[in-house]
Length: 572
Image: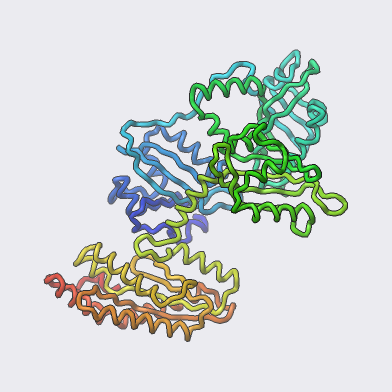
């Protein structure tokens, strides 16, 4: 068993949440479903799957190939980090939302969470494994493979026929032969456009473009080039690429046919990807790739290749944070050679798309001024909205409104990273929650948790963090607060608790506390948490009998039923 498998797994999702949440630890295949998810999916007891394999066993086999294919795109990182899909599960039809939380050093997903919803559709739906397209022989693709290390391009019979060889068949070309086939106007620009992708893995692995190639008869043909980096060397530079070539005019006719038959399906597919741009900072002319334009819904005429065309479409509220910083990068290397930004661009239909923009200066002149900048744009509108919703579920406890355990862990990491000291921690544990749940029901237990959360929050600053760690356990993080001050804050909290508990009909909120503080960076915050928890447990053991007697009397007075404290479960 690997070290990863041996480590205790901390859930990001609150398992008791009424939201239909799920979490998947890929290295162990462990699957965690919240109470809300189990309820929506109609799962209970032994029927609740604890591995993804067991979950998938309840999906019709005909759907699995497509589902695996869709998921693999996100798990590998090739299709981003967010996926929405739908499929039948037992007797219902569910809509699944998935987001990658963490990846390994190779970029593969290792930790995933998501949300389920149940569709109202009554019609069984089995996603197709592939979608067939009717294409003319002229628009069929030829395939190629390029070795940058060997300086060769291998083409198949389809590519050879497209280029007009009299005897089509697989053959090997030198890179210099390939460059000679490019139209004179394009012999340098493709190298610049693709160099960012070839040299830097962070800018993706996909290449798409319309180029003109010289045929064997001397004429030029516009072709659609599609490719991807297949291998990279130790420095991250592309070592080999592979892809396809298609006759652009014939392909265009097929696209028009499919749009007429299937609406805008193909356009929607083509719009979901990265758009390439190539900015000549000397003339302010800009090459926008076909994918870039289709992503926003423009034609080349509607979005001309100049910098002003791009500037005019930036949202007014985003302009100052986007344009001036990029102009500074152009003027001097003091501001760096790379940038990444998020902003809104106006689409052809008048809506605003959220764009993730990344750029890289490829050349500067003798004065240090950038002469060429290349980059990618990714439409993240849907991903950003989905991510915001999921992050809210991850970072907040849905029952109490306090922060979640996941947020608390992130906040501790942030304070360690920023060397925040002093820091104090108050560990909290509610006494008698099991008694309340057993004799008055879980609704009363939830009411107790909500009331406790309100009382814990009252005396704290906006910068303090109160998190529900699970069940009846809470933690208060006090950055910049020495232990003596933390004890003063705790005294005020205890006063509020005492005032609340004096009310005749109020549900008793009895909490055991443990306080610990640290000033030196030599003591990690993880040890501070352990010490605060140790002190809380000691206090809870000392007060257990008195607390349980208090709650027993209140339940008996409120309900008239007799309460027994003999159950061993009440000893915790």
